[in-house]
Image 1 (cartoon, rainbow, N blue to C red):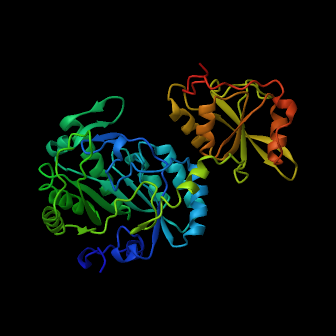
Image 2 (cartoon, rainbow, N blue to C red):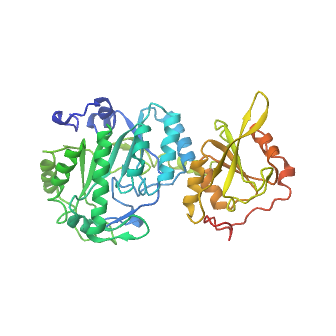
Image 3 (cartoon, rainbow, N blue to C red):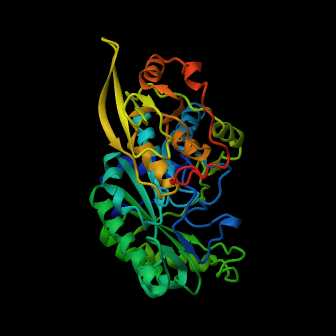
Length: 434
């Protein structure tokens, strides 16, 4: 018997049956893999301490490694070979996917291009998913989980210590109200577009246990498909560390009452952020060394990308540090005439964004296989190359760099001769070298 009640069957029964979290029967046949590319979080729950492995949304704080988008794709390719039953690729942390939107969206793009028939899913607290919903739909993400612990700001204020939306953390009912508004908007928009929405709720005795059925009623009306009531697991050094885990009677009551509105998932395995394999047989620890090997993967030039960008002052020489450059010239190659032509001049993200400057830069240049610069700090280089954009440090004629890279050759030694690399002291903070 599946976890889906016949009265609540979604029209896309195929997607329901093949996702192990949405179908009890499917959990025994179809494997899933979580790609841990999202380490940051944008809220602080009173039951979560990242030092002790976050219990929020199926324990997304637990992972052996954090991968870049390019590393994640390479790791996925190997795991699909080793576990052919993988049907679903998900991103569920170890923080929140949309506290890490550049990594999350680039990973989804890479996976969709490489595996056009793979089911994609996301698990988020919903705070910052809104601006990305249109692309999520365009990428054919079929399943999204939103963790909603309250639809009443008074109760939400007891659950969330703070909510970061902009520069200032919001606390109390103000923060909870903002959170709930964004979550419910996301559920409605996703469901209206045909995405299967699962609502996760942490059952916290004495805080929201009697409120969970109201969450199910509100989200059902917005189009949610299924609900997963997860018992609180008290964690040290949190506001709820002295609360008890809800007993079987409380969980049965909560699920029975909530089940009047939404089908209940009862086979949750509290998956790790790097989970892989069948739901009841997580193989993440078995493949820890495999994942670790991909964190050391050297950057390879992606020759499927048609262009190369160059940081230049006058358009002839590569002579700008990446941190100094405000724009780049983008070049294409005509293989018939073997000539190079300018296809675009692109403005780069402004300084002062920290690491997000490099992530946005890599995203804005996602059709380029490389960017030619006179120098680049180690941190910006690592971030940018994690998105598949090779950073080539050289000095000299742009055309000589293009000649080498468009013909799959190494940059000539003469172009590297005068170069002195940025040291480890380069801040890489979006302000130029310190």
